[in-house]
Length: 56
Image (tube, rainbow, N blue to C red):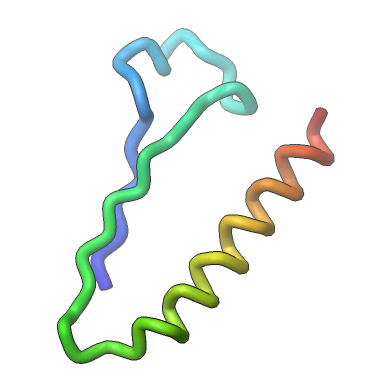
């Protein structure tokens, strides 16, 4: 799996880290366990969201 996380806009350089939005671009192999990766990715996103909530 190839994962690339990039800022959502070109103005992100002047935005403090906690306020930034990101786009995740993922390339998947055709023979991978998609259900497992969806669960792992969902767990990761949930953890990121919880961290952001705790920061505010």
